[in-house]
Image (tube, rainbow, N blue to C red; front, side, top):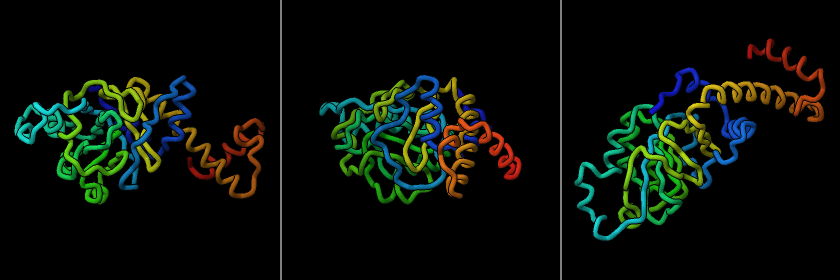
Length: 238
């Protein structure tokens, strides 16, 4: 797994998924926003390298409760091996009829220093997970055990989650709106551009709040806009 530059991680904590989707779109990436997963516990951004778990449909001769005793069970093994600072990303095929994980496993990930968890399925123990400090995203609550619908088949393989291709080590960024996947090799440059865009949009928002028209301001087609932005930036130490 590639490791995220610490400076890039810090910058991604203050940019929005909306801004990231625009910056990625400029480079031709249209399918980067995970559709379905919603944040359970609003708070600071989630930023980390993707560490993945892939489910396929359950099969009755394989998925009994005794399978949890097997230390090679990919779900349990993945929880115990997910690196510090990584985001545990679960491919549940968009199926929330049974849980992708529950409160105990999510709490274990938090205790191990993981940056968050996201699934396009559902979590059981949703009220307890919602009270945790670690960011968590799912489609909807789902009380039944994962074994009813899901067979854990692989960890740290490429997956699909929320309709997006996620490769191990890709950078997952979540805010209170949703989750975006940044290809790992583009993380630094995407982040720098997104941070610059964030600063400019903060300036634009302040101007609009003070009564300015968006014409010539956003986008900055009026040559004076960038001069005003430079002055604003110096004044605000941005």
